[in-house]
Each structure stands twice: as C-alpha cells, then as structure tokens.
Length: 318
Picture 1 (cartoon, rainbow, N blue to C red):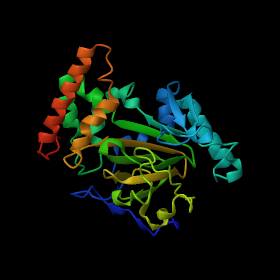
Picture 2: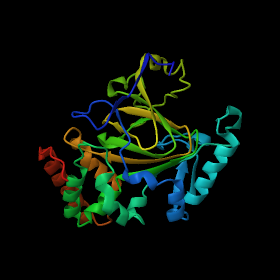
Picture 3: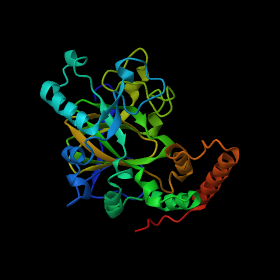
C-alpha cells in the first residue's frame, strides 16, 4: 500500500497470544470444523433463503444514492450464480467493466439462527481459534436468563457468514460496540489492510460512526491529505486461517477470489463496557408499544450491564 507511511505484515501465530493488542493471523487448524461450509454447502442447504446484498459493506446511513448505496434482496443460490458470473466475465476487475459487472457482497448473514441452529449447538465451541479469550457466552447466558430466551439461540446471532464475489470490498471501518472480531476463511482468499485506533485522525474518523470516508486504494490528496501519514498492517487470509482483530482497529478488505468467511464478534474483560449496547442492537428489546414493558426492559439491561462490569473472572468456560 504505497499511499501510507508504513505497511507491515500482520503477526502470525499458532494460537491467539495473551494480552492481544494488535491483529494476529492464526494458522489453519487440523480438521477445523467449518472446512465443509463452502458456497455449494450453503446453496444446497439454503438456496431459496433470501438476504440483502450491498455494494459497500458495512452499510452506512449517509451512503449516497447510486451504485455506492445500491442494495438488493436476493436468494443465496442467485447470489452464488452471480459470483460465478463475475468470476467468468470479470475476475480481473477491469475498471471499464464496473458498470456492467458491479460488485455486491452478501454480508452479515445469520444461517446459524435458522436451519443450521442444531449444527451450531453441536460445534460452536470448536469454531474459535485456540486460546481465544471470549466471555460472550457467559454474558449471553445472563442476558437470556433475564429475558427468558434460549441462550444458544441468542449466541448464534453473533456468528455470521459472508459470501463475496471477486473484487467485493469492505469499506474502511471499525467494529461497532467496541467488539473484538475473528474471521475464519472457509473458501477463497481475502486481502486485509488494518490500522490501529491511534490512526483514527489520519483516517478522518467521525464522517460516520465507525466508518472512514477514505478510499484505501485511491485516497483523495485534497480531502484526505493526512492518510499518507497513516501506518497500516496487511495480510492475505487463506483457506482455514483465522484473522483476529482487537477492539478499535480499523480494517478494509477485498475478496481476491470467490470467498466464504465465518466471523464472530466477541467481548471479554478488555471491552466488556460495550457488551450490553450490542444487545440493544441485536435484539428488539425496547420497542414494545407498552410503556411499562419498555421501561422494564431498560431497567433489566441496566442491571445486566452492572453485572457484566462487576465480572472480573477472566476464565473462559469450556
């Protein structure tokens, strides 16, 4: 990445190091659980299921109309057919073909909350990279007990699948609600550029919550001159590898090939202060028409937040 001051390789390790403060690439694990969940698997199991695809992931509230704000609802099978068409007709991402072959990503899909829930229950503990410090399941149990939910159904909402055509991008952004994130590559390759939290000023953060307006490959020297002072890290995520991104880090990605990625946002003692805000966004808890029910939900969330903040036990449940 020639337009920044420095671009170093992401560190690589066989497991997640203690005291994670920067991204790490975790090596492929033997017989890793998600290895069979490729595009054909999802077409076979979910071909007629519908989901939204968009040209810029994640979507932002102030996306301009036109191709940058384009969103379409499609079935999984139709999207995979589109991925194959792009690969056949424009895998080199020729600029002159950008209108004929626009790039859309199927992102944030939740198959484990539906038909694959029994599979999720049987294997979710094996999905994470070794030595991960993830207290999300423990706090999800507290939440589910409070709101009379199945805790594993609630947890399944934090595991997402992304399917991408070659050339599809994730805009430069950071995870909402202070989440850590890991991404496991099931099919294809994805290129990632990452920037530490202290680079926010050089990334012009504040344009939208959690989103930077900078185009990593074609930054505007007039609008974003400080970007050339930024320091980045880079990694290509291959089949079976897992990229772990700490809270607050900014990242941008592009699919180098037809791609399937499993991702999980998680919280531990380092970022627990933000956990209950994620519950407000994941679950419809305070939109009840009954005022008393809304107020009760708000009080319950406040109490849950206090319990999470008071939790100082770093042991991860097995």
